[in-house]
Length: 202
Image (cartoon, rainbow, N blue to C red; front, side):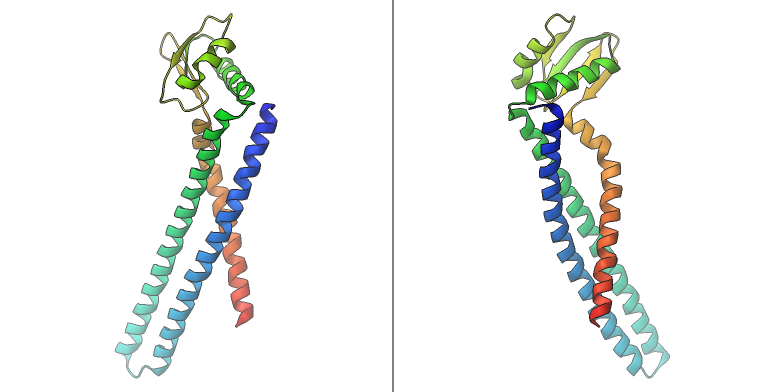
C-alpha cells in the first residue's frame, strides 16, 4: 500500500472517530447548557421575587457562580474529548506498523529524515522494525540500533550528536497545536448551533 494511501486510510479512520467524539461532545454540551439554563431560570425567578437588596445581591452571586461552573464543565469536556481524539489517533498510528504497506511508510520516513540530516551515522528503530530497517539502509553507511522507545518510524543521529526524530508520535505532537485550534473552532461552531436551536425552542 503506498504511503499516501495508508495515510489517507488513517485519516479516514481518524475522521470517523472524530465524528463519534463530536457527537459525544455535542451531547455533553447540550447537558451543560441545559443545566446552565435551568440555573439561570431559577435565579431569574429569585430575582423577580426578591424583596430586598441583599436577596438581589445573593441571586446575582449565585448566577455568577452558575456561569463559572458551566464554563468549567465545558472546558473540562472539551479537554477530555480532545485527549480522547489524540489517544485514538495514537492507537491508529501504532497499528500502522502491522500493516502490509508499512515497509513503504518506514522507507519514506527514513528518506525524509536523511534529507534533513544527510550525515547521520545511526538509525534507531523499534526492535520489531530492525530487520526491515537493515534492508532499507543496505548500501548506506548507517548502523541500525534497536530501541523499544521508538514506537514506529525512525530516529537518526549524526556522530556529533545531532538528531532527527521522524516518528508518527513526533508528527502527531507537532500537529497538536493545529489540531487543537481546529477542534476549538469546530466546538465553537457546535456550541453556536446548539445555542441557536435552544433559542428557537423557547
